[in-house]
Length: 622
View 1 (cartoon, rainbow, N blue to C red):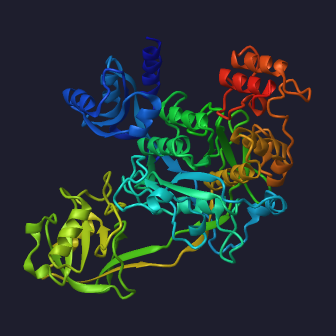
View 2 (tube, rainbow, N blue to C red):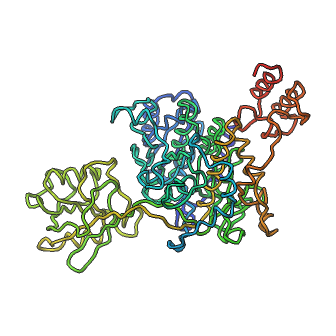
View 3 (cartoon, one colour):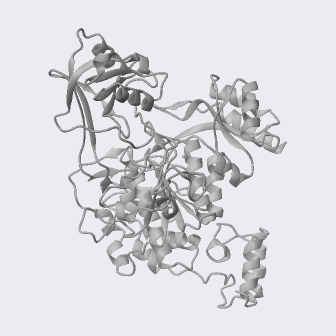
């Protein structure tokens, strides 16, 4: 009953959240994430439940369901999201229901791409810290973002690799973790095994954490040898919460069940939608129980998060480290969010040089007129001169829609009915040399204009590009068929500058990874505390007063910070029964918890299990 009251309160609050914040939607309309009660324990049961309510199961969340021991799924409907929640909230078969919130990348303010100095590393005293340790490849970090360009010469050597899948059979889930061919990570946005960066945001973040260093190439990372796990949760420029939850669940499972030493998750994204206790909160809480730090960017709105929360940075979870951005003058960056009670520290975030992927360029030309195009993900490329041919209209791209004249020419196909990969496969079978797909949604409407389309998986695909509905109809109406040039080229991997708290968070993630490899016998909790306690006070009082620590990341300071002896709770130089009693009091919430010394097993809480471990230490069993 209490849980129902809580979610009724949440629904009232949700009813006042606008579907659009500025130009960006705060949640996916017509979809909700549901946690079912015990009576709905299978996909079949859930499908039947949804059908009776004029909804359907879009996807289940199997890893999250296993972690939470309840069935979770994303339901979709023609109903509005708020109506779906109202309908489901009072149903005894539903324990939780919430919108599918959208999280946005925070690295949105680009700077001069020719600025080549990595001022941030000097600012955080990285050279002095590297005299102590540069990293040794023993730890991994998960980058939940737009993917990582794992072919980039400054990233490829530091990619996390699933050895079982790499040495296994293609198309087989060799390690039986539920994900086939997840060699460098996984693409949760498309459900494919390829986490290649589709946006550049994720590769930029990854380079700050752990670009290959000492290789006479490109830039340096905070951790020279951190293993980078690529988890793509971005589609159409934003992060859908169900994909994020599944990515976090994957990280937790790979650590708990498969022994991967993942110490941190980097989350350079967020939005205002959410509240403590929602499903993303629960997923991050599971990461805490697995001993994983969650580093979140504070956002780029210039707001006080104590008054205007942004999630996940504002969740009240002990493993979340919220990071603001600082500039070259060691001041808070003008656009950075802050919060004396909610943002822990700052790190360099203005004009940060890092890695970006190969750059794709696509265009469709008729004579001197160019039509703006975007390449389909995984599509084939052309030479710099492109491909010439007659543009032949081929309907929706079904096999019967291709006239004989398309052979040796370029197929113009309307979006709709078939998957993009089916349209392009059918065009190849009909003998086309390349494909132009135009939108079936008018420009300016939701889903109209240019979109990020995908062929799903890498393969021997034709060059294929996407154009707007207005351009497509203009080309379709040309009589006779026009001679068209289609070009899709890819330039070499490169480097550029970006600004935002998205760039600040990975400095902290890299620092936790570096400390965790140098102090392998300590918990990640204690290494996260080293980062915060080693922060260098910001020189201006106004900035100090806007952060929990009052400081900016100082890597050398983190190495130099002195923590109390782990388990010596009464600070008498011994671990004995008196420490066990104090730990037990903390576990029972009779005394305030101090995770630096009392969280023995590193799960970001002090409970009975810590008291038992400490007792074993005290009597000499461990």
